[in-house]
Image (cartoon, rainbow, N blue to C red; front, side, top):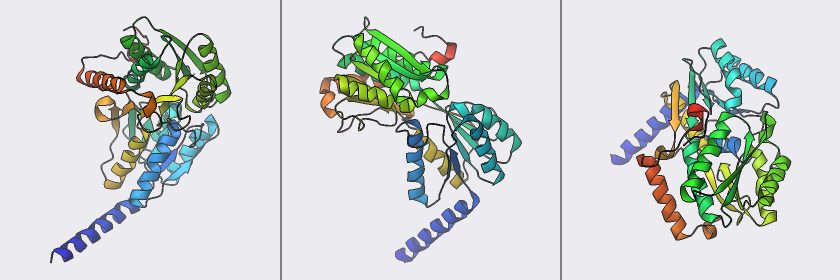
Amino acid sequence: MKGVFLASATALAIAASSAYAADIKPAVVYDQAGKFDKSFNEGVYNGIIKFTEDTGIKIRESEPKNEAQVEQNLRRLAKRGYSPIVAVGFTMMSAVTKVAQDFPDVEFTIIDAVIDLPNVQSIVFKEHEGSFLVGALAAMASKTDTVGFVGGMDIPLIRKFGCGYEQGVKFVTPNATVIQNMTGSTGAAFNDPTKGSELAKSQFSKGADVVFAAAGGTGIGVYQAAKDEGKLAIGVDSNQNHIQPGTMLTSMVKRVDAAAYKVFEEANTGTWKPGLEVLGLSDGGVSWAQDDYNKDLITADMKAKMDDVKAKIISGEISVHDYMSDSTCNY
């Protein structure tokens, strides 16, 4: 009897899953760096792959090559009945706003921006908290008390990373020097490894021995430069420790993979809803990465200090200033 019940329950679960699957046509639009940028977009892609493996539901993927194609692709997907449509990155804010207003019955989720519309879900992260953590680790690892930061596009979101990083560095070593450079003023700044390498080498020449790149695909050049110079680098968004083993001190992990998975899971179970969701250290939205690739760079004492700092940020004992709250890094 028990076996019959289990078989029936399984059949019901499969039927329910199939019913939901028939109701959704999920899609994703990556930003111009593409889904294999080894960083932000690839994190989303990893979440999509896992969702498809778990549910059998395929997700339509779109990779626009320029700004104009972003809106065109969003509009085309909406016309064809895809929903929810996940837009990857703040650069899609204007396009999503326009298309969501034109297609009020389509559900949209944008990652890294906030849009106040009844059919849009906005997911943002407390990047300043994760950046504080890796800044603290950079200060512990630095032998020169000088560290660097290479940002991508010069916008408040990337300055939020830089400001959090600086606070973490100064928390551990108050008199440390933090050299900061941005790569550019357009979206192309997230896909320029050559410029990333040049900026990192410049910072190394000024005494930096650890550089944190919050610059998407541009970071690949930073990591290569760090390897060439025998210095340390810190990855971003995805766990990038594997890219240059022994060179990558850690990565500031931003769980865009989990966020993307959650969007499609909610749509599949009928629980998707519009509004704002903010993910930080307390709910695993951001963190730092420790694995086999960087284990030899992290001592037991460093790990203990990192656990302590993380706990104090979560409890509120350490308050990390958010650059985007007032457009300053005063703390």
